[in-house]
Structure formats: C-alpha cells, structure tokens
Length: 164
Image (cartoon, rainbow, N blue to C red; front, side, top):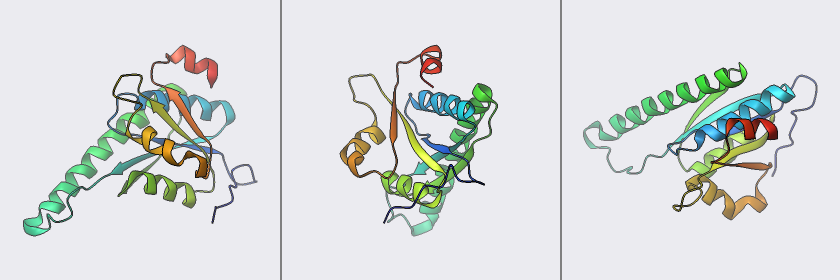
C-alpha cells in the first residue's frame, strides 16, 4: 500500500530525499536538491545507508566494531554533505542513517515521511556506469512511490542552477 503524500497540506513542507554515498557524484545530487529546496521553500532529507555485509562476524565483537566504524563513516559523510547544502542554500537538511539493503531503506524512509515528494540521485558519466543506486533504481523505477530526479554527474553548478 502506498502512503499518501501530504507535503502541500497545511503544516507540511515538501522535501526531497538525497542519497549520500561513496560515489563521486553525490555532490551533484546535493547541489540540485539544495537549490530545489530553496527555490520552492522546501526541505532536504539526506540518507546514508550502511550495508553490513557479513552478519556471521558476531564472535569477539567484530560485528560491533564494523558497525561502529560504518556509523562513524556515515556521520562524517553526512556532516560533509550537510555543510555543502548549507553553503549552497543556507539550509540545514535532515539526516538519516539506516542499515540494510539500500533500495529497501530508501523506500522505508519515503514511506515514513509523507512530506518527501522526490528522490534526487546523480549519475556517473564514466564508463563504469551510472552508479550502484541509479543502476538498482532503474530496475524498479516504474513501481517507485515518488518521482526520481537523476542529475547528470557532469553538470556544473551554473547548469544545475538553470535547471533547479
């Protein structure tokens, strides 16, 4: 069942969701989302998904150490992305850290926040492909609960300004 979006109702604010990951193009998505938010008076939610690959490392606290390190890396990445958004548009984005399958976590965050109206991703322009999240999203985009904006990773700030 889809969750009804409420972002344009009284007491609500439209927001876009941006994924902050290890790819080089995350900055293009943050830039677009920040410009979009300031233009429409909306907000930005930044999501970092921690993928814990080996759940069998429970012995000797290895899994706990891995989880703590991943949490620290996630916080650092969100600090950097939030600072970038603030510098672009003087906004303070919401920050969310989730653990698990990235696509499922993206859908869960959207389901839980009825003000999210758009997912903003950036695509890598290189020969290795558009990036892991974009590639995964393309397989299920027809059934996705909100519009998805894919920003080309080679756009300059001025080009994104003209679009957002």
